[in-house]
Length: 156
Picture 1 (cartoon, rainbow, N blue to C red):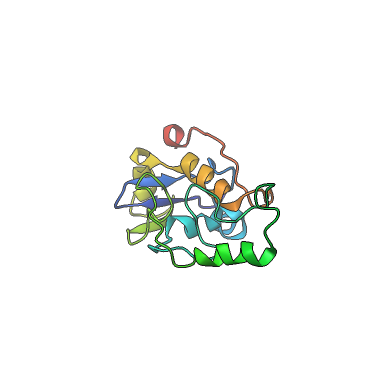
Picture 2 (picture 1 turned 60 degrees about the vertical axis):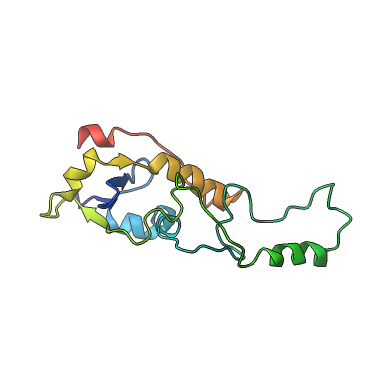
């Protein structure tokens, strides 16, 4: 069988269910699959943005459109660089950076603390996390997550 793990935030009483992320729950499965990378968004802490960083609800990449097609690549790159270090307020409703500085654990169901069972009463943020993750990842289907609502809070 093996031990199953859930990501929990003790301070905010939130949980990320691996099955809701359409992934596995064993430690190896968290480690060797893209679902383990969710911590990069949850734990992000910065008040400013930079290239490759979370750009908020709007895409940070500058897309080539018919409106800007006449601009040179250098002009488009300059616009992107101009955003470096800009303030990036993230709405408090976002999961991005929401766990930064909190007591967070990947807790197993064999752990004597009882936190795994206690997490049944925590708010499951898996769906919102999948939505924000996929928006950040963009069109790269190989890196996107799939939300798979399960009965994780009812049946464990």
